[in-house]
Length: 255
Image 1 (cartoon, helix red, strand yellow):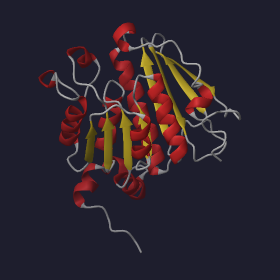
Image 2 (image 1 turned 135 degrees about the vertical axis):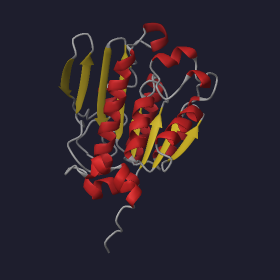
Image 3 (image 1 turned 120 degrees about the vertical axis):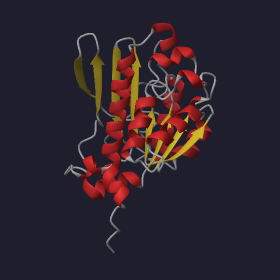
């Protein structure tokens, strides 16, 4: 049976997507019916969530346990001065509703622990890791591997950014733990102590949204199998091929 055409309001709102051969009506319909999970409502989560909402992702769940602080406003563009002290997820929900009221936004002010992630990832079509904590990143990856849900991972600190896609639906693809071993955590570096250039998180977060939309619309070639790094000093990109670790404690036995 042929699915009904999009309503006139959607034809107008998403007209620039519909003009693209890579998306068109079918791709946009997939986006509208999709569910995204975003962990972190800060510098990366802000542009990622805003672009997903504007693009029509049907359901967006945002998880963050923090509140808006004055120091966030230099880069976390979902939030504003009048929301200082408010839960970031509630501020995010307010912003996304203004951008696209048709999108269902689920705001969870909570720490993304292993059990919560298992429950939420199972309901998602794509997961965006926009957090700044190594242990949380590992928990997100483990849940995505278990549930076989693609993960779009981004990070930015100082003048350096990186993005990768880990797709456990592909038996040959690496997971996050293949590249960053859980038992070898890097020296913890956060914006609060190291600083970060404001537009850098915007670039990486927007690219996370781009990769997520490609996965949801079933179009293009994802970054799966590659780590893309940006040096903002010189605006040089480095693309590294990353391999699956046959001894990986997280994904080696999943297929």
